[in-house]
Image 1: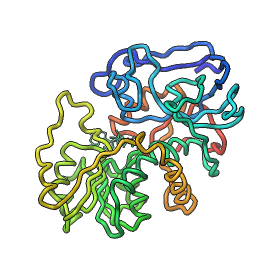
Image 2 (image 1 turned 45 degrees about the vertical axis):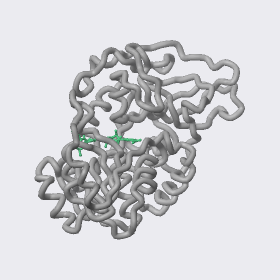
Image 3 (image 1 turned 120 degrees about the vertical axis):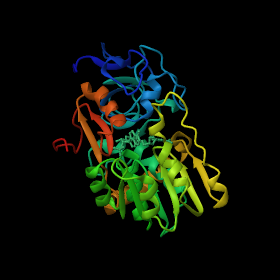
Image 4 (image 1 turned 90 degrees about the vertical axis):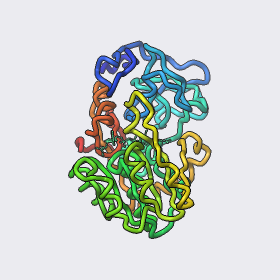
Length: 347
Ligand SMILES: NC(=O)c1ccc[n+]([C@@H]2O[C@H](COP(=O)([O-])OP(=O)(O)OC[C@H]3O[C@@H](n4cnc5c(N)ncnc54)[C@H](OP(=O)(O)O)[C@@H]3O)[C@@H](O)[C@H]2O)c1
């Protein structure tokens, strides 16, 4: 990465299977200059999310423009305002929003880019991508608003050691639920127990069709689904009365050529249960509430961020591949350069 250039990662070709290095093109352009009503941003942290592979595939994902070959890849970042001709964005302020996979960006602060100021809570500003950004907010709106948890609910969370999952585990515990997490491998299971899971199921070593009913003998009251596929199908066989399923994501299906084809959704009927999807951008007008509650949980220690930091702009392709390979733990992000409160070494 060169400091005197705008470095970018662009779509080189449509991915097949997990992303590989040749799917990405590295490019350098002059640092852009802000015009009237615009400001220049310098990136510090960039987030990773499974949806980015869909962007690269040219899919029309709600909220973002479909990408063509050669386009800079969509992505959210934490960035400093380094030049400004805009009354609402002052030099020295940090914001988070749609920066794309690049080290500089000129913006006019459109609603589409969804820039918000980074709240200083004494933590590295990557917090605005994790607990106080789309990942933490997805956990919040998916679990609290769609899941409607009650104390003592038996809650099952798949992808529990991932970005969204680690927050859902902690919020569920803070709200008095009995928490069953599903994750891949002993290290991830140890982590989610530490975060508050009463039971951790290693789906790579255990038979989920037996482990889920064993962990939830009276059925599942609330299932937070990050993975879809067979896991969703097995939970549907183990519902309590009036249970709620929250469709957050279905990462086990994203690389399939054909749709998964869920066949037992009618299990919802006999238990008067509901299955509800949500999309985080549809909750944008309510982000202040999520930020307030997440700040309170961070301050009380009930929620802590679990961030998997990849160092350096060059690491972006490898970091995106880690999501589908399952090698990230917690929220995957790339640190382009150290920012405020960020003095420590990589975890
Ligand atoms: N609805 C929304 O608005 C919204 C917003 C944000 C995210 N999402 C969705 O929420 C989910 C979680 O997102 P995230 O950003 O926090 O990513 P993440 O959970 O950190 O995603 C990576 C993890 O997914 C698991 N995984 C990968 N392939 C899998 C497979 N075939 N079967 C089961 N698990 C697999 C791996 O964990 P293991 O090692 O445990 O397998 C991996 O570490 C994703 O499905 C994402 O698309 C939805």
